[in-house]
Image 1 (cartoon, one colour):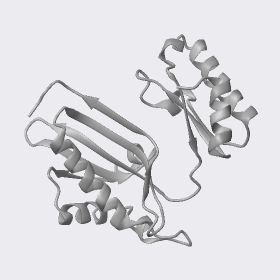
Image 2: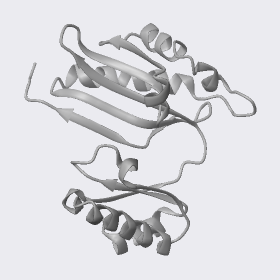
Image 3: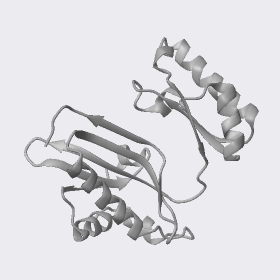
Image 4: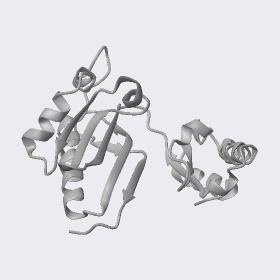
Length: 197
């Protein structure tokens, strides 16, 4: 993971604006510790963002949790979604879908299905959330690439079927772009356990 100067050089290669995010195996919610800096316009801003993340963690006595930072291009549009997998003791892996970012925590507008998913399951999951109207296009915002969202759900379902060591998966946020442009996974967290098929 890059340090401040290296992160700034990488950002220059990617092209501005960029986002800089804390990379940590210990800290799950990066934004809670100021670990997400958005819309950085130049190398100086990237170096300052890195230093700011580092200093906040140092003040909290958590500097050892800093593995580095991730530099990503800024995504200017799209509907923020989440896709996840959780392990149910009775049914096994469940795929979860809903609005992403902080919306999933506040609104809890999610749908669940047991794996493996079918095409119909994926379609019903997407159409089953209250926020579906946002995906259809709402008040001047373009619709989302709904077939790409359904394909992502099917691929996640297949992944957890083929890699049974995955006990938890959280893709949040995923930006659903306009039709024909797909989805972009912005942040991912995977927890493995020792089980095998």
